[in-house]
Image (cartoon, rainbow, N blue to C red):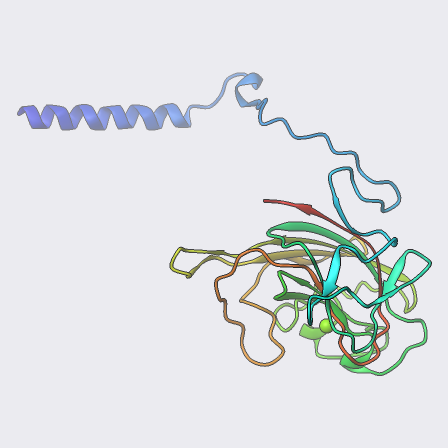
Length: 252
Ligand code: MG
C-alpha cells in the first residue's frame, strides 16, 4: 500500500467514525437536554394590553409615533376619546416614524357600523409592513370582492385561509408575524419576505412567502431594500376605519 493510499484510508475511516458518532443514539435523557440560550422573561399583557417588551405605537393618547406618509408632517387622522383613531378621509396614509425589520405586530381595527359603499370601497384600509407589503383591511360582511383582495388577504398575492371578521362596528384583532426579505450585496433576493396572520385569533395566513410588494396593478417584483415603516392606509373613499391598541415586538 502506498503512503497516499494509507493516508486516504485513514481519512475515510476517520470520516466514517465521525458519522457513526453523529448518528449514535443517546442513552440517557440528559444527553438531549439544552440549558442555553436562556429565553428572556416577558410579562404578557392582560386583556389585550401590550406585553412588557413591546414597543407601543398607539395607545389612544396621541399620534406621536406616526407621521403623514404623504409629506412627513404630523399625522392628521382623528384622535377619538375612546382610545382609538380613525382615518381622516383623503388626508393620506400614515406611517410610523421608526423603521422596522422583522416584527410581531398587534393591532385592532373596526369598520363603521353604518355601512357605506360596496366591494373594495366599503371600509377599505390596510396594514403595510415596510411600506410595501399589505395585509388588507376591509368590511367583507355581506360584501363580496375578489378573494385575493378580501379582508385578511395579502393583497393580490394570498387568499386568506378563512374569513374571520366580527360584525361591522365591532373590533377585530390582527396579529402579524412578518419576516423581512433578504438580499445579496448585489441586490438579488436571497430569501423572500414571509407573513403569518391571525385574525381574531384564527390563522388566516400561514407563513406565506411574498412574491414582492403588494401591487395594485401588475405583477410583484422585489427591489432590494432595508427596514421600513409600518403604514396604515387611507383608501380615499370615506372608509372611516378606526384603529386602536397597536404594538410591536422587533424580531431582529
Ligand atoms: Mg387596502
